[in-house]
Image (cartoon, rainbow, N blue to C red):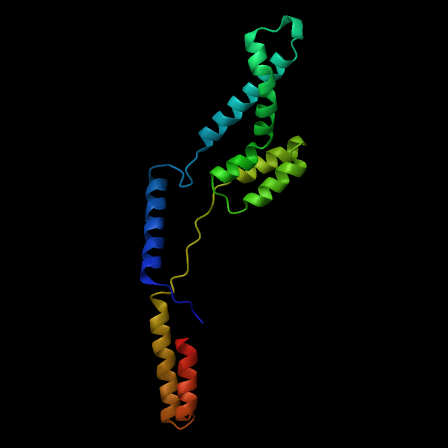
Amino acid sequence: MHEHRPANMVDDEKAMRARQAKLQDRGEPSTGTSGAMTFVRLIALAVLTFFCFAMGTIPASERNGIAELFGPLFFAAAPALYFLPTIEGALRKQPNQMSIAILNIFLGWTLVGWVAAMAWACKSQALVPAPITAAVAPVYLANEIDKLASLRERGLLTDAEFAQQKAKLMA
């Protein structure tokens, strides 16, 4: 049958939908991150990774303080760049974060796999309207009980059968 949800749960869902609609009307994403910020993170990590790599390739005898600082940082920047699709999926609260992470881990080393994981992580989530059962359930229940009462009045159901069927509906 139909599930019955408490009124406060229905109110919470209505408030969430209203907030998301307001954010979309203002042109803001409802997930807390935007495409522009994703692009900024991508460019910043790419530049940092390549800079750190370049600093790390300087021979030890010619390194200055900047090279000493940024060279080893490559080992933090490169994995961050590699796992950026997984990070974006988590920031955007994607429902399929684990699938994005698996694609990123196993196929991210190919440019196609990394781009596919990034596109999947950045894909906007469509708002699926929740079924409106709180208002429908009482009407449906009342109609079903009326049908059972009609069957009992015509003698097609005994009082025990009526009570049993009514109990099933109320559960």
